[in-house]
Length: 325
Image (cartoon, rainbow, N blue to C red):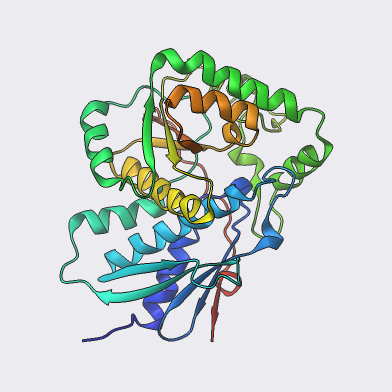
């Protein structure tokens, strides 16, 4: 039996993993294949220190990419086991992935890998997700509590979520470093990173999603004026601590949430700004209860059937995210 996937399989899996969402599409990951293992490194040069001063969002983004990689490999007939933070002297070495041939490739494996290609961040309002109660049971069953605790926030929590979002926006308003990063990374593409203007929403559209991040608004008029307020379900993923391994695992759990939601036909939008400031994060912590540390939230809902999928946001070429030793 083979013990390592072919170079072609590795390349395809890494390319799919590169479709993972990250803060302002910064794509802060690098994979190194040594012929036996695949190693994941954080690329600090693609961090946003004013927006993500703790570095947690960089680690979460890399965790999502690791989760996507495992999904891509599973569909190709390989199981991937990750040794997280294997070198205590290299904090940027996040994981070493080892491989084993799978006995079977299930339809669920194929569906999740296919969802990587279809998933995109949708910042517009959603309708309530149909059959949510049934999906929630499935979602809770596949999220390992050792990776993250999932909380489904009640409809009654929406005013507090909106308050946390407004608080973040108010605190950021006079933060010149944050504003510089926001305008650098959004509204245009820089070297296959960043958020293009076509993926942003107009000011009137942003008002309909009060839990969303305030982003630069295109000058064009709102494209979806017929849509009403957002009725998505908001979920929060939390960990016991803010330790880097907990945060990385949380990113892997978010990968599962996003891909399984896509398989179910739902639209998704990660929400990271609600945990960037201690004061807004405290509001989220109170909503979920207990002592867990909220790391990231996500909106999940139904996009209108006639809403055209946007053009895929740009991604770095394989040569910039995969190296061979």
